[in-house]
Length: 350
Image 1 (cartoon, rainbow, N blue to C red):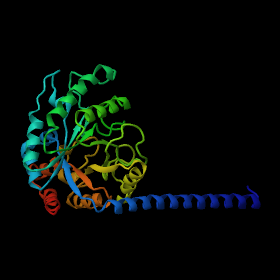
Image 2 (spheres, rainbow, N blue to C red; image 1 turned 30 degrees about the vertical axis):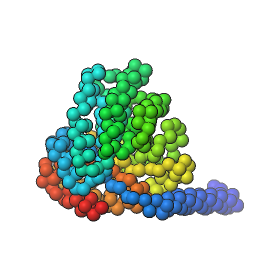
Image 3 (tube, one colour; image 1 turned 180 degrees about the vertical axis):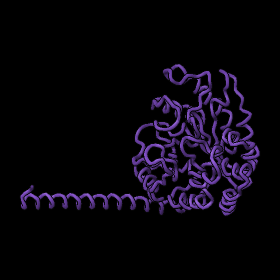
Image 4 (cartoon, rainbow, N blue to C red; image 1 turned 90 degrees about the horizontal axis):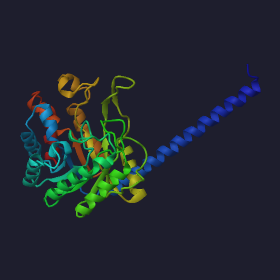
């Protein structure tokens, strides 16, 4: 048993430590909030652009026609599209290219006077993230397949760089994220090489490099893009610990803080390239495998409205919603227009 004097000193030390910790947290939070508010107010006079990603392979997976899906998305009034160029889709065998699918996407975008952010590289949005064709083994040293990848990227850039719809390129996607997807190569030198290649082939269009969701910190290494992209996921299934749906607690201003810190560091802007706007299936299942009632536990019309509000509150001025194929799937396959109606209201209002 501690003597009274020693016990008092111990309690006093713990109290002082607790006060110091509380003061530090208060100061840190206040500083973060201050940076966020500076950024939000400094950006508010710029045009606000809300678009969506579109991936025809995912539309097919959900059981809806890709071209009809894109037509429907454009009919909402969408004027900004984030498109992909999966290597596996467009070079099925070495040196044999088939760009039919991406051609019709660009033609539809041009006809609708919409702008395109085009993803290029090995790692692009949607699982398995790294979309290598079957004839490429990315577990081998990159020197054995990077020349073929860069030859493919060259084909993509040269084909679409003169399109009036093209607005930006996204180089790879969340390149350094190890915890999601089936990817085996994270060499910064490869990212730098791809970046330099696209910049050399088309110096007229800005380049974006995406960071991953939620992590505190700022990108420090090369390449230094024209702007950074970030993904924001609000409600997901926690398969690791709780085995429940998890709502990330971050307020919108937290992402304003990340963008503001980046702006203060190197003057570069940040865009939201994925604002979660689709359901997240539990227990390793896929969305078509679960009921509409289960889908509504992670995403419904009310949450969709909140996503638009939340995205704007971050202060970032370019936002691509994530999951437009899913909205159409709910409308056509599940005969539930609730989410689609929200999209109509939001895009028509802009």
